[in-house]
Image (cartoon, rainbow, N blue to C red; front, side):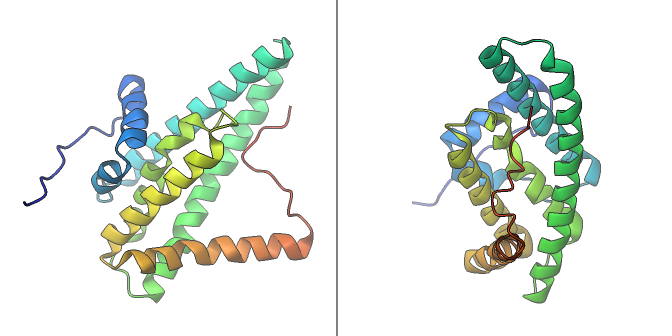
Length: 191
């Protein structure tokens, strides 16, 4: 029996739709990965990514306030969080460039903007990163979305996408181990 094509979904950064995408991506990961729009412009992917990162920041601030019962640190946490948000966004841009060059080395077909959009829309699960018990699972979901969308956008097998993604991860891990910075944690906000 032929497999039916999943119905299109909206990748709007509007909050109700974004939370819907978050749940949809967790319930139907393969369908979500197949629907990631890797073609289009830079602005849509950037807005989507920044909205997901901002929602993670809001969750972290709320969690911190509940745990410490200290609303005074909200301003400090917010300013540090916004700086962290900008740094993480810049890291996404650099990561997309690295993935672009690596995919070109193995004859990938995608343009840089397509790879950036794959990376941005694979980050829908960042919304839940503020929940420490779910963070590792959500990172694996994001990695899965990225591998599927990179494979589709570059028109090469999933094994090549795995090579494209794991190479910089291993390189960065090696550099951090050599420099003694292994316990550097960019996924949390220090208060």
